[in-house]
Figure 1 (cartoon, rainbow, N blue to C red):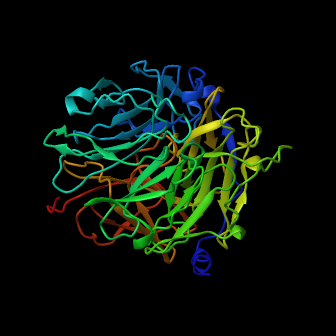
Figure 2: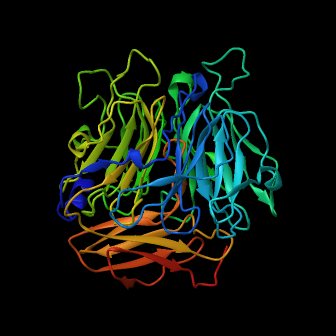
Length: 505
């Protein structure tokens, strides 16, 4: 099998993963609470809101207020600590995604809600003001649970896509009452009339990705079969011209209880593979640039039942995220798990999964050994280097239970490189760019995107594990541009690459 042969080229496993519970480093207990409208959602956004190179957090609260947590960790490797920031006190928040929407250099937040969504403009000092009306984002009374964005040619503002769940005003609902999704394109410095993506099939995650690496990004939507019941499936939409893919042009109509999307080049062929979380099987699909193929069961990625405890009912997966936890040069996978609420067909005691990729390309469960196999009903999560020591830490959002914070304490990890991109407006964070890192005789590819996960995402350096190699080279394909030359860089550090090519959208 092609994917297996490619994975064999990865570096050796450095160490068994280990995490320390740093939840006491949060200034308050934070809980994602609420009834039916907050069975889903519960995302967390990771962003550096004050430019100090320490990732901060914006956490959804459901019926409780959303909170901003500002990172005040003392130094690399020191215990992770946060202080409470000055958040607007919003309720009804299901999730949030960071991006520099107005290209002023400061990260902003798109906030998803049960009710009107908001755009909060950042001031570079962890302060935020409501810019929703000024930007022309319509105050629609929807139940929004998914989001993605990208910059398209000729537009100063990004194209935004909002994924909506059940239409709460449909008297025949909730089953077969999925709301339509909305796409927004800007005209000048404001958004134009919303474009409806119909029919909607209860989106819980969406991601715009150049999955064929042709310079033509497309929108993938993961939908919850529980509410569309029949007739729906996982979607792929072309953006220009806007149209859904179908079976006639190679799109396989897969139906599942779609909760989250993770994207990453697992098999090393340069194309982003995807993990789709669900109730029961978590579906990993390998991508060869022409289409997607379901991973065989032997890969070990399905994580379909609890791996600890005595509850043998099917698992329910939510946020999924690829990251190299031990920096051995192979992408690992975290999956947040938890019952919807009291669904008797699925496990109530359902520990989160940490699937470590082995040298032969298969995955092995390691969350118990790593110390993170908690049994609360998890929802959103994020892998990020909160203390700046080159190891990916973890934050987990829980429904009706306190948020968790875990510091990566894995010993003898491999070398690493964190790459951040900057370019002139528009699109200062180079969303849509591809980064390639060449080290140890192979190339690792990463795409800069906004979206995916479950109700939350990150904006910050793209971190690449390098294993035992002590030298690396980097090149970038900027949005709308060509590849740069390979550039040598030192390892075990964070580097920022500025675009010096005058060619723009």
